Amino acid sequence: MIELKEVERSYKTAAGETWVLRRINISVQRGEFVTLMGPSGAGKSSLLNVLGLLDDEWRGEYFFGEQPVHELKRKERAALARRNIGMVFQSYHLIDDLTVKENIELPLSYKNIAKTERQAMVADVLDRFRIVAKKDLYPSQLSGGQQQLVGIARAIIHQPALLLADEPTGNLHSAQARGIMEMFRELNREGTTIVQVTHSETNAAYGTRTIQLHDGWIVSEHVNSLPQAVGR
Image 1 (tube, one colour):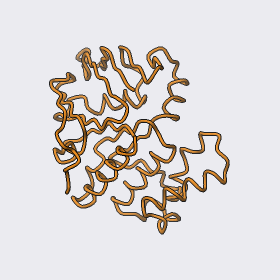
Image 2 (spheres, helix red, strand yellow; image 1 turned 135 degrees about the horizontal axis):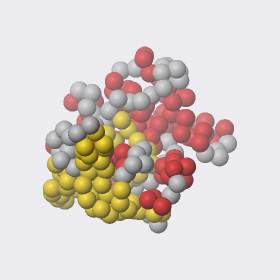
Image 3 (tube, helix red, strand yellow; image 1 turned 180 degrees about the vertical axis):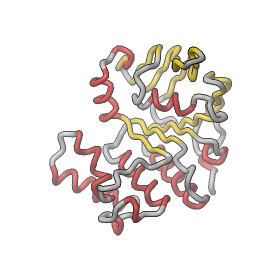
Image 4 (cartoon, one colour; image 1 turned 60 degrees about the horizontal axis):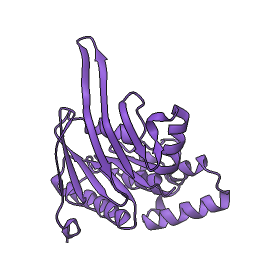
């Protein structure tokens, strides 16, 4: 589904060129649940930004399915991301002046979907995430856990092939975090490919494979054993 070949990213600073990704070679198969781990500054979020097509300044080759992303223009990359990728952020990134329902519906506005069908899709997601009673509230009226649920609902409503999550439970207490990770595991079992960034070994254990980064390099990777046993 995804293949990166010799992907690199650097920033120019007063001191010269600072590298945040070096010679990244990764393959992610459809249906995998991959975790990116490493200390602060290891390059995890930078790599997630490349995967999510939020960053155009990297070098190397990136294949998304049959699409050679590195050959696409910016507008074409944006269209590819809207069709295929959902993103969940630690800081939620909800729009303050939109209600829960309106925030969730937002990704559907980029697609040619009839209003009645959009409304039905939003209703289904609200019910699935058990936030129907919150649909007319604004983000400021929600708890951190509820805001994160809305963020995940918004990320998956257009049924993306790939879900990217950057420290999705970083601001939540343990019970909320466990609920979010159980939701991710359910989505993965239903066929959504997931790549998450986390510092949590507990969260990493929900996945199928863990990749360790350090100073922009991949230093190790391993297949997780029995991820389905987590939390039982």
